[in-house]
Image 1 (cartoon, rainbow over the protein chains, first blue to last red):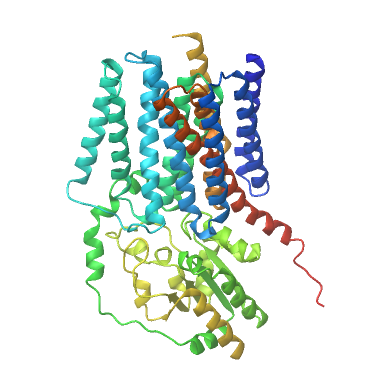
Image 2 (cartoon, chains in turn brown, red; image 1 turned 180 degrees about the vertical axis):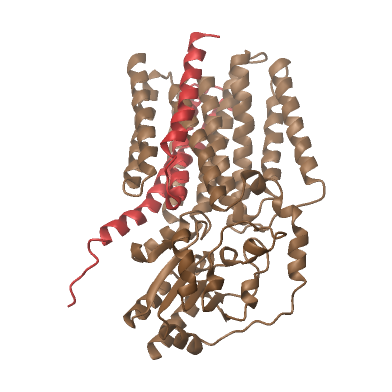
Length: 461
Length: 105
């Protein structure tokens, strides 16, 4: 029987690896998700026959699966595509929480003096799982705008976080060596939860995807540690796969933003307050704003228009209106393309998903490297709800928090139409010089309304 | 070091290399779905949650087991469903490609 289970776990592991492989290519990605889900089902079925269930155990598993399944399925089905990033954060957090609880339960079984081989992985799983849980919840709250998306900083923050980390380390050593107080790991759990919150607070909303990816890798490692604890190969393989690929993915994501991971995580935003203040000091410069009719005429008589979509387009659910505008322009012979910044939307690839939902033809979507040289030949760069990804201070203001991030060269277009709800700064919380550019015309209003107005203006022109 | 621990360590180390190698060529547009997909895979902790819940026999273990199973199931089910919803969009785009030249009516 144990041989069958071991083979089933092996099959599950193969499914996970193949699933990940398929997930990294657009053609096979959806099948990859199914492959991985199939592996999960195999692992679950193989686990059941080897267990001796108590009555209470059977009941709580049934109730737990029903509740968790309903919450997961309904949550994932109902969520709007714009809110996907925070949903991923939520699902990641609960995984980390589960890993920590499994370790607590297993450690309890060993009583006062758990052997080192059991105590070490359980402590690891408790600490990392709790950090992942608490950190993910803060990331969720920031993205859902239950709390401010701007970094929350205070003097001595790094020191406080350092003390927290040191306290956790001290407790870990105490639990591993002395380990006489059965509930000492409850304190450990509380400290790790606090550190998880404190760790994510100073990170700005725009950087949340990187943080979620990192915490995703954390959860993977916590799961692997639980695997060592339970001597379960399925957990070790799957958890480690996620931990390793998640770490690499985190690095790729911060690379796409032109930043190092350390720069994202440790108070780069806090340190550069001075730059933001200097920019704010330039207040009072004039901006030009236009009417729908002016802009409709400008667009209708252009040859090349590049649309730069951003998160504002997504929240206003304006992707269909953008598509409509592109269609009427194309009918008049205007060449329309979309310039997709790697981190447009709120996660890498998020904008592609949203535009695909509106049936925007794949050929019109251009990646940053592909499209950046085309801006200088474009008559109009139409910026819809994007901000930081076209902010020239990323190129020329070394003090700026986003300095060094690759941006779209929208400022090189002959005309720039900046559609925005207000003059409020973007997600990174900084002013955008492009709005004050003499070539720029501001068009204020909700992205969807504004686009609809432009559609009729173009038709009338 | 016991044999079992040695085996586990071997699997652990090899899995690290496989995990890095297998996604090393992912394009930017798939970063989000891939993150979400790996997120679903670490829902395997449900296996661990079921193992500890199965033997629950005291109030503490019952509560721990119940909460762990709920959280882990949410992770698995939500993770795979939300990933599928993202990738549905990519599929739609691919099927619409050959259908693009619709004859004018």
